[in-house]
Image (cartoon, rainbow, N blue to C red):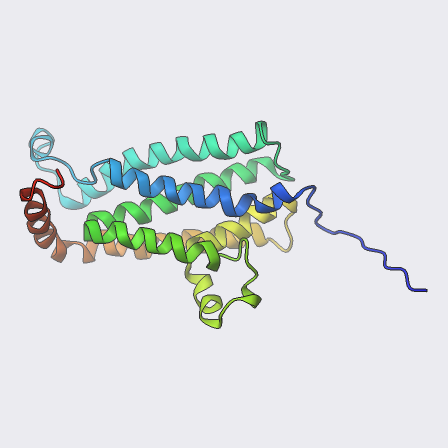
Length: 221
């Protein structure tokens, strides 16, 4: 004799739209890793001489412009394709695209800085972050069902905040949660800049020595 009446406040039309935050954002992270693996993150001596020997911070920020441009193209294709071809639900299509653009830029900035600062170790850090974020970004697996340390780690993962913002763009904004999450996502930029502009300097000589030793083996060129 009991009848349950359910009223969805932020309805999502299909399961595919519900899973978009996980797969779309992780594809951007994988794309960022592929960029720093296939493209050189350093500027050759010849180019530096042609540019008049710019300062390290100029090389660091200037060279990132190439990765930023490719990232914008990548996120436009992924998120634009989701809207135009896959017909993903998006209550706010422009905010949907904005989340993709900003997320892609933050991800590739992280991957670029890790590789510039730590060399091949930076690539391993990017892959490790990918593995952790598959389960810890609150995208596919509820944090309440996962070990406690993953719940504690989740707020410190960039994809976590991208997922929350993208869900708001898909289903609707509640209490400015979209802008709050994007703000937390952009808060990762200052620590990344600190690594790239300050902490990277003591590691430059070591990375150059390490790369020369690896290349001398003729296994990697």
